[in-house]
Image 1 (cartoon, helix red, strand yellow):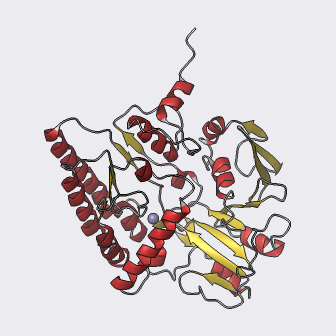
Image 2 (cartoon, protein in one colour; image 1 turned 60 degrees about the vertical axis):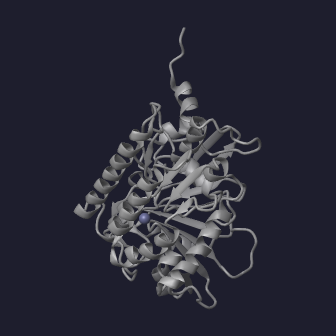
Image 3 (tube, protein in one colour; image 1 turned 180 degrees about the horizontal axis):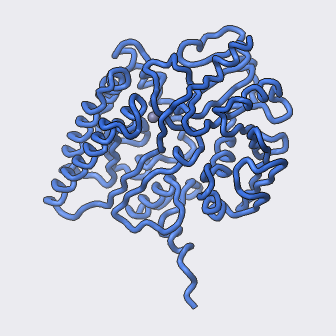
Length: 398
Ligand SMILES: [Zn+2]
């Protein structure tokens, strides 16, 4: 949301928010959204709107206006209270799927600390809003199924190691958001996310249609970036398909054939998996669960499937991010890396949760199954419904 939140006036924010929403909606185009598949949906404060019927998208403009204010001045409780009111108002309406976003916990954590009293208070606000909603719905009949989930974890940031500033210092012209987006003759573009991961594009205005692979990535820049203590891991596309994963101590390759992911260390053990592995996706998810980067093989392979992913991706160590203290407002906490603190999220649900590692993408097929909405033929969702995961983990009855 940075592109809109940094606009200087509310009007500009509104316009660029619309632009960002349109692009987010277009980016998810190959697969239907839950709103596409469940037309009787209402969404409150969502950045993704595709498939919502007219009038079903609540707080759009207030999200833009209050969201911009919240980003700069920290007035997230105002936005969260507006969400809570809209949620309560929706209780009496007909809907099959209700999607409610509270931006406060994330927003205030960025500005202060993930455990700051104001952040804990914003959790309580969500709790009270849920209680008020349940009380109102209970009066009207049966309760719906509930899923409460976060999209990422968060850590306090003690070190801002900005690759763009580092490269500029070396004389490498670097394009970065939001102040140097028009950098002339840029040799590198750095796109920070979250702020603990960054995607780097070499010769961003070359017009090249295909991303770079291992043999064409500038080795000197790679070595310079890998030497940063803030970097937990670097990854890029292998020449022959798959992904190369590198740390200062080691290098490995990830490849995927139907049904099997292969982790092949060339030196060391950068993902901490104990050596060569060939496992089914879900078995590998379980295996990575105890490492400091759960689900890293699947996440990295998936990331590089899109040609728009950077030529090179860096993920930060705990406590470090990739934006300098120049950022306004300075982020005191962040997310976006592939480390356990950012990857693990709580899932609370009123339905039985399988005793197995889950991904948040498993929620969509679970919700569809719950609503008796079939996944259209030809559509492949990333997740697996809880029912299938539970069936796979039950011991065989003899
Ligand atoms: Zn955030």
